[in-house]
Amino acid sequence: MSAAPESRFSDRVADYVRARPGYPTAELAAALRDLIGLAPPARVADVGAGTGLSTIALRQAGFDVIAVEPNDAMREAGETLLAGDAGVRWQPGTAEATGLPDASVDALVAAQAFHWFDPPRARAEALRVLSPAAAGAALVWNQRRLTGSAFLEGYEALLVEFGTDYAAVRHDHRDVGRLEAFFGPSGWRERVLRNAQRLDRAGFIARLLSSSYTPAADHPRRAPMLDAAHALFDATSHDGEVDITYDLRVIAGTMR
Image (cartoon, rainbow, N blue to C red; front, side):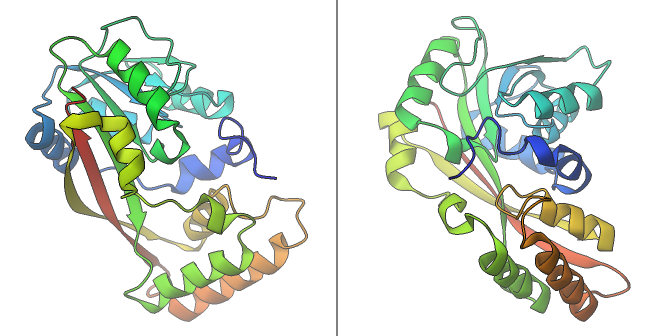
């Protein structure tokens, strides 16, 4: 049985912090401005903030951020990572129950998190917490490219072979029904950007282990997966590194 979204990353926080891709600040900020008119110093709820990768990009862009995250271990890692930044406030909560006051934020951003949401309930909560003059909401994903190099194709094959619930967890970022249920009749607009990571061997292994659908430490397929991962790295790395490329998708709408 798959772990609940609130707990499935609890044993992977260190690898998540070490090796998950961030978000290019200038490009993300430009997309948010162009799609929904969001500009600093607006107050943004970063819903499903995880360990703070999206929070960092939003802060660097000049936004005031309330980071909402249900997983205690991930939220604590984010609090540590961004300790001392007065422009960030962390709190427990979900997309369906953020714990934020009514009409308290200018926008909602959900990075790498919408696939865990219940869209109708998340929409109702968004409409409750967005201010009357709010810009709206934006859903953001680093969508890993599955083809284009021997490494990318080998990495996808490795996940298909060894992932515990990879097929079930993989999500379609363009699921129109879910997007309609969240954004409502006003619809949405989309921008696709490029993002990339260059990882050494340790970074690649950490990136692999940060995924909730890879075998846990006590799983019998963990060791065979790691053997296959090292073999993939040996066969496809250049100068001791591999490149993971992403389509950075930003889907945003006014919500009203």
